[in-house]
Length: 180
Image (cartoon, rainbow, N blue to C red; front, side, top):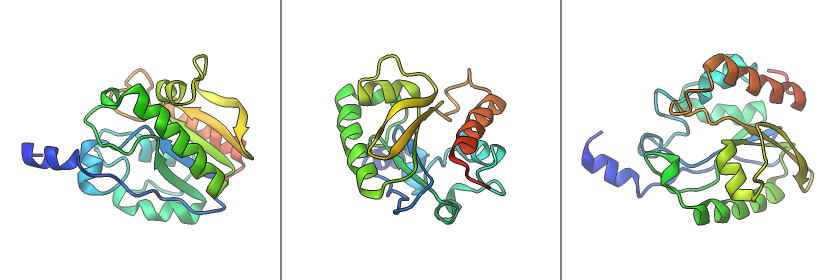
């Protein structure tokens, strides 16, 4: 990407893929610059969201980012905690994550998915003040929506191997009783 494209990407946001009746609403931390520029969630080639979604059994095949709308047909949705596109999630402020957490709760109360899957434990801890949160199911819920924290699928989160990431996604799939 050119410097001009990168600068323009910082001004862009991504629309949510959400509707009532979802089994799982996946929630990224925020759009990366390439995702914002391309207009598709998890569009950077090194991002492991789409491979993990398929390897875990959520999807019958590996979708490309430009096929993202098709996940709605499977009862899956995608949103973000923060809307601002950045090169790295650590460019977001704690205030942005907390405000994004409030917006996310309102979104969950409006659309009422069965599960909210937040992709990034550190962002979850900050957004919701849950300092001791770990990857996996969380105690409590937002209304009737249960919460699961997944590892961030970013390629920068290298200590989670693709196999381990897919295994954690599969634990959520099994818990949600979502047949792929």
